[in-house]
Length: 380
Image 1 (cartoon, rainbow, N blue to C red):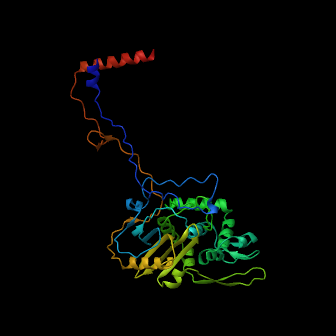
Image 2: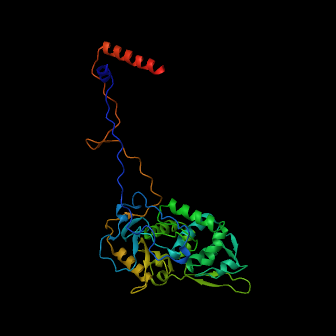
Image 3: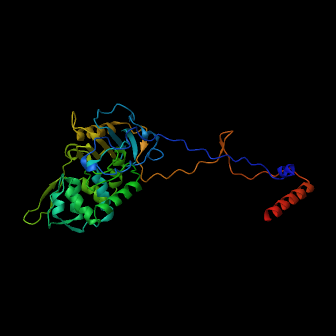
């Protein structure tokens, strides 16, 4: 009977799915920003580290810990940096692009991107005493002052106003909803190293980003006309409040002031983050973006390091091979691995089972009786 069943039923090899091999996608010790943490970052319990994605966003080489690219670039003090084409997204060179660091005020690029996608630029927002009292750099808004979102955005990007960041966040429902929306946008565009903890970029529990993410976010933001216009402004008239007259708000970007090809940028600093920078320049019809994290001002100021990186990038031949790519959206999760032929190491294609060799009607009849008998027994 066993022989009859074997003849009647073809044997199809089905292999068990193979486990997915683990991929090293992040530098050791770089899953969280380096210590010591700022007092503002301390929380009980502390936020869990952001997970590494299954594969480095932007390509395999983006998981590197050391410098990648054509070599011969300028000396930089930044722990992580990225040089990329702003339009094509091709990464020309980088160092530890996905290492997590504190972004400081370069996070305001994400804040601004959230604002231009969420608020009417002509909406009027009233300043408060709480806005005025915030720590760090300020644009100069005050209690009772009337400001359009457009003006607050200028205060955010030109003078790194933490006061304007707070006013804009309040207009989007408060810090909680604003941070949630910022997080959503970061995920949507593939900035998976980024976790905002404050709208201003001031240190907070779990705050993190990467040089790769800053370049991605700046590239996406530059597609928004209001953002691109604002970061390129050198100055703008700004409203006063109460008995404080209006004044001219100047752009504090030294890259914009000293590097004539600059089309916009943002710097940042906290004691824990050190110096950060993201910016872009255009020369000869080509636009490049640079992002530097955890830099120092000596022996070369951070803005000048960015300028030297841009100069080097513009000098590279157009045929320079890319080492990665700035993504436009979060990577699609990989499909489940195919069923594999363990013996041959091949994928088994789904195809029709070939017909059996002719068998006698007697064999078929016996097979039918056996199957019928088994069915009767199961019903009992």
